[in-house]
Length: 124
Image (cartoon, rainbow, N blue to C red):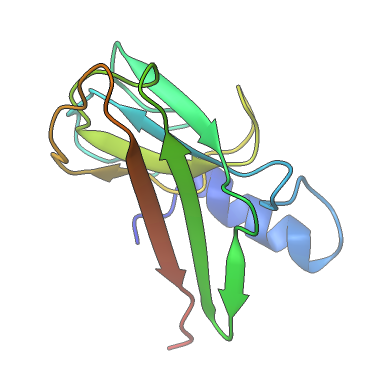
């Protein structure tokens, strides 16, 4: 998972009870039309069009060392090419935990898309 520097720092803060959690109230999946290569120093999606959506009911879910985030984008939301995505802990600003550049297609007006992000934390 391409973790940002800010995401790394937020995980460290969470270990001692600081920071803003990536919970059902705060977590958002952001999608955008940017195709700039990932850099750990990035703090937001890079595209001209971008949209953050809150978690579906009951998400995120943790099962052992795996966390699953899921958001459903309605017919009037994020209707553009989805070329990048990330997980955030605020509707705007906040911390971008990660960012992935990946062409997921173009969402059209009237379509409903559900986007799921699964993050597994491993020790090496």
